[in-house]
Length: 203
Image (cartoon, rainbow, N blue to C red; front, side, top):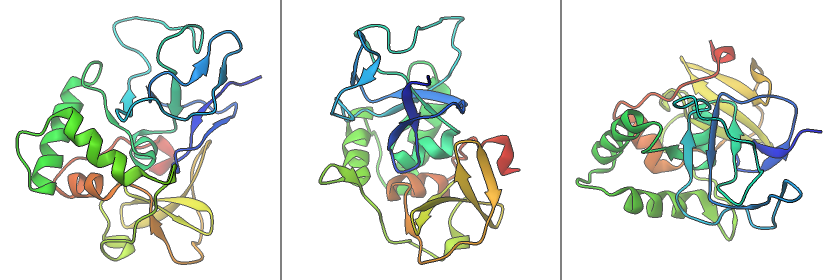
């Protein structure tokens, strides 16, 4: 029985047999005795995206009172849900993202805590995923941006739109007006040069 630890672009956490290419966390939100989630879906505004393998360390998922491991199809999915790169296991990526985030958002000397505060205001609205109007035409969004239309999530990349699933991306016609899933400040970091890593099916 798969654990409830796979994250959708809307930030929901569900159980599925499909594997992810990134892990991450939002603090401690599980009961290690039962390996099930608590009612809360975050315990800190620092929502991070981590490597699945780092220095050969191995963790038994949800087995102790430590951060709750969750998994993402790819980095674009994690960004859409409101996460950012970890400054510990992905230090180079995190510094590169912060640099692009600062340029794109017109700020300097930003701390991780300050960036998390902005992202937290953009990712949630009354405890649920916050959707945003598109800042530009759909296909003018930067590669890695994700949108939602009629309850489906879509990736923008290479001048095309692909439908998201836990198994990967596929070609599909979008119906209905799209809303932005990826936080606007992250979109501006993409526009300033950060390129999120995509699942192989996006190619």
